[in-house]
Every structure is written in C-alpha cells, then in structure tokens.
Image (cartoon, rainbow, N blue to C red; front, side):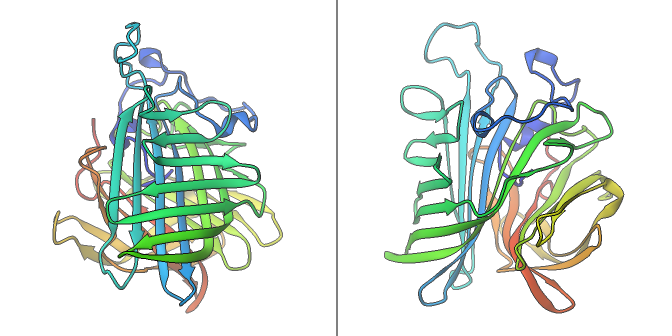
Length: 354
C-alpha cells in the first residue's frame, strides 16, 4: 500500500461505491496476468509503483532510498478530444535519507500525460515524469531520478518470485468487498548503481522492495490514515504488514503477508496484525507527531522497528496535498537485527480527505 507508498494519496479516500463515476471495481477471483499487469491500468482511479531500498557505498555509508510513481484518472474532460485534456495525471516522489545529513532530502514532480511530459505505459512497467523514470527491463527494473539536491541511477535485479498480496493479488482494505486493491510486491531486489549527493558520486549496492497497487475505492471513509511496513528479512524472507486507523487511532482494518526463508507464504488476517507505537517524534516544521519506532506483531513474528533517523518527513503538499513520514527502518527481534526496510505513516498531520 504504500505506502506511503506513494499515489495521489487523498483520492483513495473518496466515499461512495466503487465503480461510481465510471471507475471499474476491484474484484476477487481474477488471476493476475504478467507481464501486462506490470503496466498501467488506466481505467482505475489510482495506481502506484513504489520502490524503497537500503543501500551502502564503498566506504560503508548507508542511505535509505524511496522512489514512487503515482497515476491518477481524475475523470475530467474525458469527452474532450483535445490532447490538452488532463485525462491521466502522473506524480512522482523521491527521497534520500542519510544520518550524516540528519534530514530527509526529497523532491517531487507532477504532470499530465502526453506531449512527452509524462507517461504510464500499459503492457509493462514504464512510468515517467520528465526525466524521472522507472522501467522494467529483463529480470529487473531501472530507476532514474534527477532531484534538486541528489541523483539516483539504480538497477534493481529480481532474486525471487513476485509476492501476490491478499487473495491472489486481491487485497482487502475494509469490511466491504469493494474496499480493496490489486496488489503485488517484489521483495529482495538486488540493488546496484550510483547515488550522487553533495557533488560526490557514490557507487552503491543493497536491497530493495517494490510494490505495485491499483484501485478505484481502496478504503472506507472511516479510516483517516495508515501504517505500513515492507521488510526484507536477513534470512531471505519478506514481511509486509499494514493497518488502517480510525479517528481515535484504533485499528480499523489490517493485513499483511510473511514469506519465510524457504519461500512459503502466509497471508495474515486482520486479527493477526498489530502496530504498537514505542516512541514518537514531532516534526519541527509541521508539528505532526509520528510513531517512528514501532513494535509490529504479524502472525507468529514480533519485530521492533527503529528508524535510520527520526526526520524522514516528506512534504508533498505541492503535488499530493499532504505530509507523511516515509522512513528507512531496521527490524530486530530479541535485540538482534533480522531485516531492513521501510515504515510509512500517513494521516498524522491531518486526516486524509478529498
């Protein structure tokens, strides 16, 4: 879901039945088809491709990386034959975290499709806003981002099969069957490439996680935000868990999956997932308070999450109209590190609404 993955975040909170206004519903029982489902699904309201990674340069310096592309169908002027009509919008967010800097470096882009400004291709992953791109290429992906104060050129190589979330890719986000998304993950991607920051080029390697999700009505209007994790486990496994919160901060819905070291996968029911804040950090800019350290119980696993650094708040008001916390975290159990990944926290600044 990703989050914080990542999309025109406010639009997924629209009330009303899925399919209203001409959007198709996400339905159970439909098997995904690849490679076509790697590409765009332009009939649906929202969609995103969400990459998070931990990478290290040759000196041992660590970075957290986030690159997200969002596609939105706004249902504006769709009958207008003009090529200028904004029939599809594409947004992109990118973040770079490093403890030496102490604060998340981030940037964002937005454009309507056409005229070479932006594209979200059908048939396979190929999304772009200007010179920001994410493409599937052979057995992996290539990400290119030229942000204001950093640059990313990363290759992401597949090391294990994709992971269908929920029921064969049908991921429930609420009590109604229509409150769902199509959702799959690509954990344990092997990363190589370069990060350019502070005028220096750094060759990096590491591990990444990619989510691809699309929907027309993903969650109920009672929900005001979500917490999400995607963790590449040190034993080769993968853990995804999320919860949607109501206005009182209680869990409205939850779910997830755990792939073990042998490749066996357990899909987690709502009652099997809990998020317990352990420590909070208040942003000096927005005043929002985020639970940046969490204890997550997911099936038989209990993991403690600690951030690479506290200040990983992303100010996306210029593109998606919100602020959220999107942070690199270490996962431990019994005091020993067992994995690394990302924690996404949305709806802590303000409830997400249209």
